[in-house]
Amino acid sequence: MKKTRLKKNDTVKVLSGNAKGTTGKILFIDRKKGKIIVEGVNIIHRHTRPNQKNQQGGIIRREAPIDITNVELMCPKTNLPTRIGMEVVKDEVTNKLKRLRKSKKSGEILIS
Image (cartoon, rainbow, N blue to C red; front, side):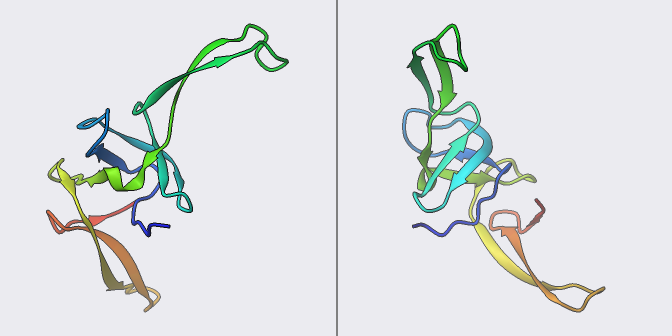
């Protein structure tokens, strides 16, 4: 199990594999298996038989999971791949400490 700071709807860039260099939005994260599904990346063709749900059957195109270590978050400010750090900030209203994600490249706090 890989601990990651990526979240659903983050824009990521694929670093290795057949889809190297492509970017997309994270649709699903499986933290136990260390896999993610990225929109428009690693498309597979699934051949299905006719059934109750799909009367016609045929070939269905969908995204397959890729390893979470093969992607890196895109910095919203510089639009380049960046590592993610954490910053502890005190909330002025409630006086509680919050852990926020921070881009290592630009130093900008990531809100999502």
